[in-house]
Amino acid sequence: MCGIAGLIHRGKRSNVGGEMTAMLQALKHRGPDSTGYAVYGEPKEGGYVMRLKVAEAEDMDRGRGIHRVITDRIAEVEAILDEHGATVKSKHAPREYSLRYVLSHDGDTGDMAQHIEEVDGVEILSMGNGLELIKDLGDASVVAEAYGLDDFRGTHGIGHTRMATESDVDIKSAHPYWAFPYNDVSVVHNGQITNYWIMRREMERKGHRFMSNCDSELLAVYTAHNLANGVSLKDSLRRSIAEIDGVFTYLVATKDQLGMAKDTMAAKPLVLYESDDLIAMASEEVAIRAILPQEIDTFDPYDEEVRVWQA
Amino acid sequence: MASMTDADLATMTQEERARALGMTTEQLTGKSLYIEFDPDAEERFTYPWAPEVDFNKRTEIDTDDMTSTEVNSRIRALMAEGFGTIVLKNPRGKHSLGVGILSRLNLIVEGSTGYFGVGLIDGPNVRINGRVGWSCAENMMSGTVMVEKNAGSTFGAAIRGGDLVCRGSVGSRTGIDMKGGTIIVGGDTGALSGFMMQRGRMVVCGNAGKNLGDSMYDGTIYVGGKVESLGVDAVDAEPDDHDRAWLRRKLTQYGLMPEQGVDHFRKIVAGKQLWNYDNLEPNEKKLIL
Image 1 (cartoon, rainbow over the protein chains, first blue to last red):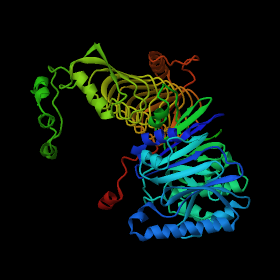
Image 2: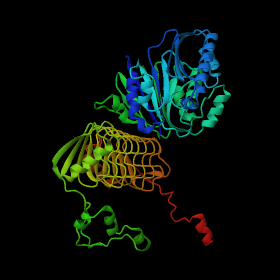
Image 3: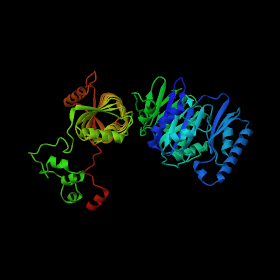
Image 4: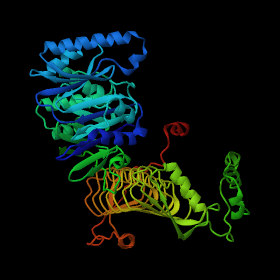
């Protein structure tokens, strides 16, 4: 049982970070293990935001040697950035193991991303013009405070509170997942995918990488694969309902879109609120009410329903 | 057992009451739980320990800064004081509001509730002016529940009695495992509605999703709109005058009567092809053959 939430403002920016924090905090009871955000801010022209982790949160308790390891890993990452001709415009470390770089780069970011992940223990959480993907252990208020998310202006975002059922409690199994190496695409998921290994092997044969054993990562890889092959977001969501087995409701966000899909059994919840300038959705209505206290009309999407909204 | 008066029962603790009513394991091994019918005793329309409430005594609870448990305890406390009409303000999607009310009460919820709203109730009349989340009125025994807006999935799961009404549309698996009572939906219903239904009636004025009435044992489903598909062993039946009269009465009662009347309603019942109650289990067969 996990909690998912998403919101998209049409034609305006808002404090998406603060709104997502309020929604995810209201969903804490659905999963207190970890919390994750994928929020979309002002697109950086000609630049990229890269978020990465160079160690797991639990590694920090395993002796003092980790500080040295982290320094070495960061140096190695920066050497690779340099090798690919990327200039670091700014660097910020909200936690020792979690870094945010603003880069300017002209070449193939996918190739660079693959190279960076060759460094042992390093995982790129996200890369994109507007996407900022933040995930860490703890509830929404803890993560928001550590990463300064209470005031983040943007157009849309998705988020997740996790109750780990099929894989470990760590950052690599936390949501959202970035659709590696597809810029600005992220996924959150609530459910269980039953043909995970079949689909994972199929995706691996096609050359995609998996960083964790969490079934939700499959949805990110699957979406990335479809988008890379010219499939629209809506068609990718539709296809997933036919090709992926299990019970699931998941949200996908791109640079300017937010989409949702629900499986054929409609077994996982989602409540939707739609107005002219704001669309909000969450596993439970209580999360939507955290940002919209007034009386509103909401509804449940049905089985096999797919929707996509434009920012 | 019939000599036990309601006044006596009301003074007892839950455990003593259970014992007095014969609900003990010692009794179960030998005798049955059967309570002899006493023609002189008044029929028990209310539980003996239910508080006396006056519908004209009205009060409000602002639930904004309260937890669900606090709200539910507050309702009980107010009922003990004799309040018969309780209004819940600002519920804002809270879960499990108004559960387990086992006596007469007018409960009005001004706003929307989350999951498991007014579950396990026996008797109250509830009006919810907003939307309800999953599993509203689960295992309801009697009373009425009116939901003005939409409802989530598993609306009226396993209900055994009473009228459960939603003016808007409801999610999937409506009336799953229902064992009695009536569910009325003004709008559409999702997939697998009436799944494993055992008794009672469900009325859907709008459309129904796929696998309607899947594996139903018994009971009746009426649908005014389109049915995407029928489930295993759910079959069409010919609605007769009794059905139409009942539909007219129920839908008029809740102000949901469609403009074109009720003649277009489809009636769906169990095909009873899955009734294999007289078949022996494999190990029983072995003993006989």
